[in-house]
Image (cartoon, rainbow, N blue to C red):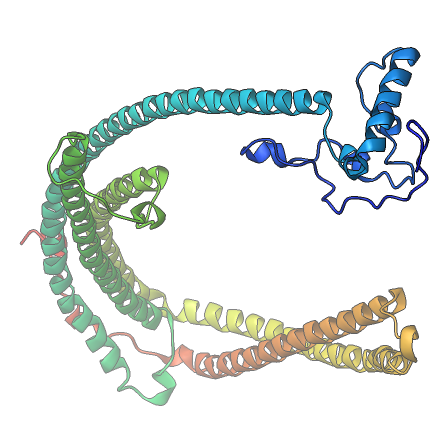
Length: 487
């Protein structure tokens, strides 16, 4: 039997419990480990009561009181040895108070977080409501501005369409006058061609291009040139009328689009949250059907108006040009008609001058042919000189491709060799182009030489020409009013 108060030497096993303190409430926060240091203590003296309470945060009692308490516990454990293991797993009052205060703090923190969330959410809803209202007001304001812009451009389009209709009518009238004037030029053209036809019936020695022949040809050319200009202006007038109508069509199409857009934007502008016909269109904000921006939209109409104004200006300018053309062509044909009559008396002297002129041109052409041939030879030599440098550069590149492994580097010599090959190839390409141009030029010069020699052979027999057969035919010529298209 052991004495009361004696120290027990028996070995006690540790309680097989969790490292967490037992639950003291049903709250989830009570399951937290509030004393981790206690669970990790593996000391063999953990069963001692005074060692356990030394690890707590409670202010220690005086040594005498601690000793008395310790002796009391030891005395009790002497009589109840089965309770010794329970002493090492129980909580202290300080742990109990700490657990309560922890729950209080967590509850207070949760309430504050919930209150802060509620206030922030209410403020967010109010801000978003104001933002939605302001956004809708701004959208309505933008729609109103858009409608005003459409109305402005509609008025501009309407004004331009009226001007274009007037211009189309004016240009159509000028076109009819031009067609009548063009028909009147057929008579003088037949007279000039008939004179040339009679001159072709002379002997071969008379088939020369003297001043009379030139003037006759010039007269034909003038008449044909006048006809060509008339036809060209007539074609321009037809094309301009088509352009005017196309511009008018674009204006009217733009006007129609503006009317439709204004009707739609008016309906959108007066649409409210209580309006009928509103509904959800999921994903419509992610689909962009737009084909223009505000700048490109206004620029499109402005371009149409500017195009129409440009077409009107071109049409007005064309009408002025046609008026000038009618007066100019009539004067040119009359002046050339008089020049042909004067040229008959000066045939011999002018023929000699023409012959000398042809000889001079032939000499210059021959000199230019010689220089062009020398240039071609120089170009061929230059091409031959570029073959060896090109071979060297390409051979260097090919040899450098045999470098092993990492030595196959795209270094500066490689870049320079590539650049050198390309430079030489470009040089060869340019030289070949110049050679082709020189050869074409040489062919042109040869053709010119042949023509000059043929003309010179004709001019050699020009002293025996007779120019009296055609004067009887040149007695009729259209009047000025008929040539300008008034009758």
